[in-house]
Length: 115
Image 1 (cartoon, one colour):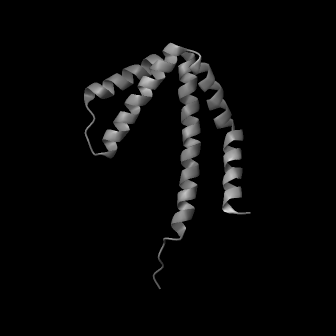
Image 2: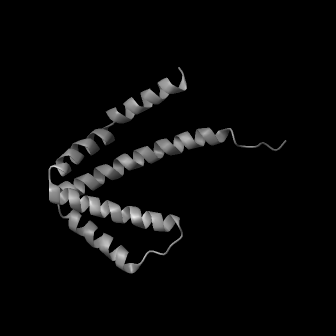
Image 3: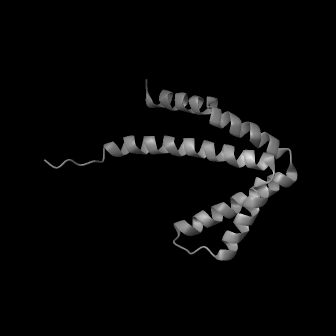
């Protein structure tokens, strides 16, 4: 099996995973609700902005943290939004695990032995 075949098999396994299927199903429900979709997009934009600032070493202001916490609290009161966020987290965790596995294998070649 070559690496491209393995990548296709991995992509299929991801697409067939419970995490992906549930995420896609709830994503379709959310897309049908314009107000909810807008709120989730706003929340995700703020999350991305915070992550970008953290990566740049910038301090996150209390106002921004308060906004995102408030928005999160509001969304968690909506069952569809709560399901979406939970499905998104589960899918993201699975993908992070896959990236870690791939990274660990690739970095094996970079280990130096001291003999």
